[in-house]
Length: 109
Figure 1 (cartoon, rainbow, N blue to C red):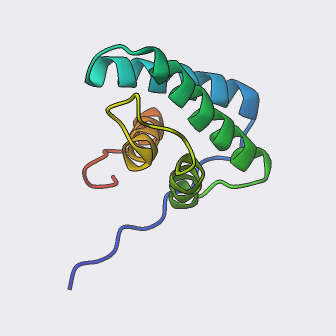
Figure 2: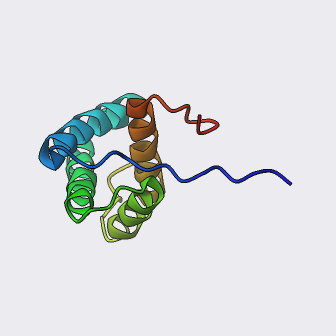
């Protein structure tokens, strides 16, 4: 039986607002590069960053819990003008955070 990948815990936030600004910029860039630049990408990135910042300010440091929060709260977002959905956004946030921590997205190391 394979061993489960241990949970990934982010360091406690030093400046959640600055983290949110970083995430918003990186996510917006990712959205524009992944398919085509669209005006809605800015709105999507802003909303995901708001969720992230609020969760971090409430003390959430577990990456899995942050991803679930983004999926859950982005379900009410209107993605009709986008190529994306809540799962793609949450996964992109996870990948960006893992990359910023120097953790391989593939295998959690």
